[in-house]
Length: 310
Image (cartoon, one colour):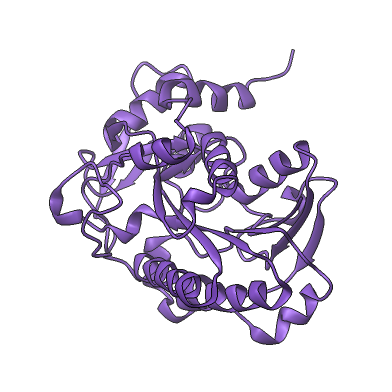
């Protein structure tokens, strides 16, 4: 099995690359290192530096014939998408269209897209979100990902490209980029805790999020890839557990030994939703996948990574 992983130098992609290697796959990582780091690419994986939103760079993929493409390469911050919506479109939509065309040209039958909860927006205020919930994204990021889903759907319907898109909720876990304070709510808060500073929160502490650990996300991709019934469908990848931002921060503080952790509230960011909780019943029914790690256990795993070695 030859697995090509775009964004494999990033947080989720590098975890997926390591898991595929452990399963004995040939792994090719394709990344433009805009947010990832080459040091994240695991030993044993081939690395190709390429901007998939630029047609002129596809010559770098010459000779590759993957069996499956996991497309995780993306700009994945709703906040950042307002700074450069055209770049967001190139990174998320244009890259997906071009990659889908390339997959067809080399005979790769299977593409799995990392989509997002952000395609739902507020979902008319009804949570948890189901795959059939109203989709009205509130950020350019959500718009580009929703459009990418539809392009893959049409490629499936008209050209036989076997696509599946997984709508990821708030992913967290070891090896998140703590330097990026505009992406990944848990990693942002963790950066403050590790620095011993009050956590600065953009928006209400009463906002609700569904936290899913990266290891479970990796298993969701692998489960969907191996199940033909998932082709041409969208699935939520989530824990199903809704927690307020305030509660998430206090649980994080406790994992690092703080009875209570100080918080500074600031104004919100554009397009931020109040409540986002997912329902994973469809993915469970299709593949048997279920979340295995919930927040307290996940935070304990993260805290263990930062404890001094004996």
